[in-house]
Image (cartoon, rainbow, N blue to C red; front, top):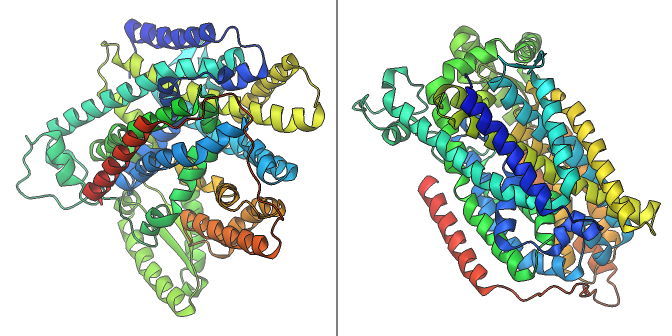
Length: 618
């Protein structure tokens, strides 16, 4: 990719403009409520775009397009379409309780329902996940994309490698969120959320155009190609004809990522946790001007979620059709993939005569094409392992051999499809960088809010002034940003199985437990406070234990097991030791708490549209 003067002008002009708008709109935010919650004055359109901008970053563009380029295809779109239904439920079931209690953070709500101990445990857990998983993953995915696209460039003699890009992104985000808090984020997100969708649509348009122009013989096929498929067929016709296996939502029961059972139960758990209880998302709706504005904003975001798979997942599928050779070349030259493949092959040589050890070695089509004899040998060995596992009724361990670097799908699409000299490359890059900065700003603001309000103000300085709270929050932003930048380069390792899977799998250590105690706490008001504490503590132990003892159980199925096990445990304790009086949530806000009827009507429409999309792609 070659950027010209117009691309560079648009790129820097967009970024500077976004920062200026955000800081100008929030220059008077001095107290903690104004800094952390935008003075509780956000309108529905700001909330809707801000939710999307905080959610969609390069972890989606890179991770989801990479997963789509891999075997998962449209199955990965379930994260988006299920989110649409989830958001509607959150708007009318969760949000009224949260706004009524006037909370700053989600852990704070647990003190109202359970105990201060439950609040503190959740605060610590969320800080670990926000900084160690979400923050570092977004920095990594943004740095990966930028380093791929700018690998032939240098700034002041400094090479634009993964580490350099990670620090640049982290520093930009830290400056951005420190200056203006949530209100700055929300106004900047209004611009960046729109640019994200438009940028994705531009990539999708050029992807379909290139697919239509490319002869069938030069395309990588994922399904059975109709013999009468013409080279002159348009992009949509070729997409449908070449990707029969990828244009369906259902994957096998034993799939390690999204088995069909996860669509029934498991995938709902991270969705409800993420959209209803995850601080860096819910902080936007906690800043609502009223319950009605919050509900309208959430439903608006739900409608936008229906569009995301068309601008991220579909282009990822097309990227594999067009550029599988480039993905194979990247994998063949990636030192970490080479090292991991060598390690897996060495382990195979040790156990190939002992199928009873229950270790299988899977591989993608790229590796099989370049190692056909070995692939047949390993496939025969895997069949023996499957028979031994069935006889012993025990799970198997899996090692993966990679022949493609699927996470390079996005950088290939941008670098090879977007025409130079038009300014579009600069705009798309600015939209992607803006997405990274927007998501990081949301996470940094959320993490600093949790530390400031749930740790510092609760235990370290209960009488701290408003000015001191804002100062602590800003200091946290800088510390957390540096930590995320230090951790990000370590995620560039094949063992994580792709950045999107890394985020979802590690959140499983807390998300089922948190969701269980919130749902249980709202439905059962007489269970004692210890139930919330135990629910939080037991979940990571149970989730990690299942992963260790039964590694073949998909992480989404692990989430479902943990969720229901904790609900059963809490119910039993509630029956054995009920409180003498039902807990009521006091109204501690002056906000208008009347629900929005138009939002409910549109929410029903969104749910119906989501069901129709599932029927079409099932």
